[in-house]
Length: 287
Image 1 (spheres, rainbow, N blue to C red):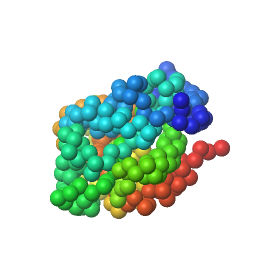
Image 2: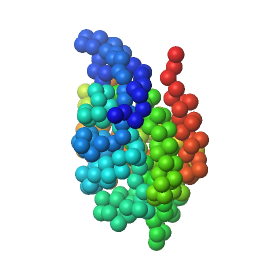
Image 3: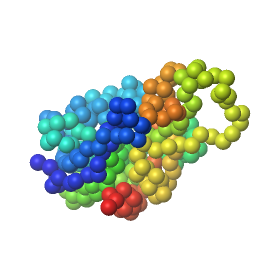
């Protein structure tokens, strides 16, 4: 059963433009989304695929099968979003892992080490590095969430609202979900000059000398809202080297290539509810 009755989402754009049309000539679909508890019988493949998308080129560094099993072992915490019923793959998901509770599991320990190294590499993330570098892992909730590229952001606020309720219910049952911080793992990207265009039109394209750092852009617009409530936030570079054509392989309906980056946002536990309310207002369907 859906954990809430079906909600009508905004029209979702397909990822392909109509043949012979302009880049703005998209097919439009009315889609009704449903929210479900994670189901071990149906959701292993869908959640693991979304985790691979979330970790991007560094996904190979982790045991995502074990991480998916851990997410599915707590079915009353978090949500999946689907279109054609509970037995289909998730289009989006949201869950969290108690880093203190599961620090001794190999799949979680690997992620803690990875995040510690990334946080230590930039002063922007120093509060995260400090939390993860102590002798004891604090009660931090690692928030994992991802959605397919053309799923509208409006599916996100219900997932977070339900998560707040589920955490409260879990606390009433004396379960280990009393957190000091929420560490949201996400993705951003920068735009880079296409290598393909440089090859085709080399005489007309010259690299600019100097200049400011490239603008960091968001895959998840809700991250901008979380950052207003955060202790710290910022991108980090992936560990896995990307080949020359990687940015162009992610180029879609635009001139620039895309360079994905990991992104971390640290929010104190008492700030999460206010942040979720602001996200609901920010992503409120128009009209």
